[in-house]
Amino acid sequence: MNRLSYILLAIWLLLAVAPAPAEPAPTNADADCLSFRDGDVLYGKLLEIQPGSVIRWQHPDVSEAIDFKPEKVGQIDFAPRTSTAGQTDSSCKLWLANGDMLEGNLAGCGSNALSMDTWYAGRLKIPRRALQTLTFNPRTPILFDGLSGLDGWTQGKSGKAFAGDAGRWLYRNGAFYSDKSSSIARDLKLPDRSQMQFDLTWKGALNLAIALYTDSLQPINLTDKENEPDFGGFYSLRFLQTVFVSLNPIKKKDPPRMLGDQLIIQSLQQKDRVHVDLRMSKPDRRVALFLDGTLIKDWIDPDGFVGEGAGVRFVNNGPGGAVKISNFRVSKWNGVLEQAAADAPDTLHDVVTLESGAKISGAVALVTNGVISLLTTGGATNVPLASVSALEFARFQGQAPPPSQINAHATFVHGGSVTFELLAWRPAGVEVLTPDIGKVTFDPAAFRHLQFLAPEPK
Image (cartoon, one colour):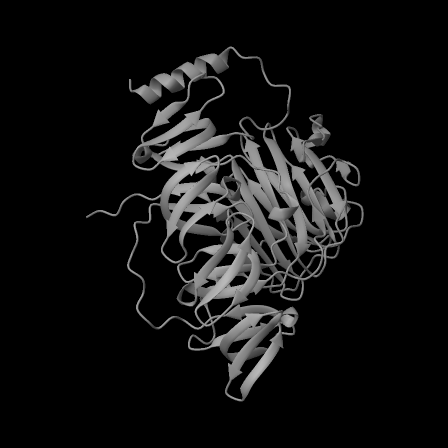
């Protein structure tokens, strides 16, 4: 038996005699998760990483810190953290040519570089050769930011609860919890284009249904929906047995249907938490699902957008599964999907997309004082930044920078990611070296996942 096996056995013995928790939250919901390359997992808290030397880990049932060899670890998932105002007021997103995405506030852009102010790494200066697409968040207040209690939410029962296994959603420390079949809903006054984000944690099988753009605050028995009280159309996003995901347009008198095939996401089988990001657009008949910053499916309804309400409803369908929802946030969406960044219509010129949908092609000379100075075939023109929804940069035609020793890929808490060479991870900061930005120190609270990349075979 190796050292890790002894440690896991000792922890199991300690937990086996511990009293059962009173909290209905999923087990280990607020702990970091260390995933080994052989499939083992260990919960606790990351203390330090010295690349090539040690990953230092603290387990709550072991007094001394545990040191692991970095080459044995594949990924670290960090416990969900409560967002602060400074972390959620970014005005734009920047996609780089290598696929990385950064959030922040545009400080300026010249012929050689773009500057962005971030809460997690201060001011970043990114060379023009690395830029791909800059999108601006809608200039409207956040519609809903964080869970503060059950007031304003309507409790209900899922269909399975009528057999006697009724439950209720509970609130604690900015999160909703459910460990039995139950429903909770709210009219969020969703606009025609909206973005909904939250952290989802579960124990046991995940069987969760999310009603989007619903006008009913009570759950609907879909097997007998024609005999339910009157309700308007909505979309039902369903997680079934953890790995199955589907989107169903629901109307009272219409036969049941599914948009596309049922998805099978095997990676969810190895997880107990995920960051859910939904982008929804009535004019485009679209519902797009992102998990941990990755686009999973972009559904387009050929029969038109069926959502007739402006609310959301969460239904834990159990049985026996516990669910936690935290860091819930709803905002207006600008309608730009991330995969659109890879399909620039004009790779030789910079393209400015206005909020009206019109596009202006040319060369961006300067962005400062709320104005984009653009050189077009018709001459120089100034475009107010307040009227711009996106800026796509011409593809770099020169020599690429020499390859660096990339060994890690990190995902941010609000989506997006960055690849780098990890130099050191300490509570005070994460020191990295990126091929485009250079040496950067990140706030550890910025990250949700840290993946260690296996070295390429020689």
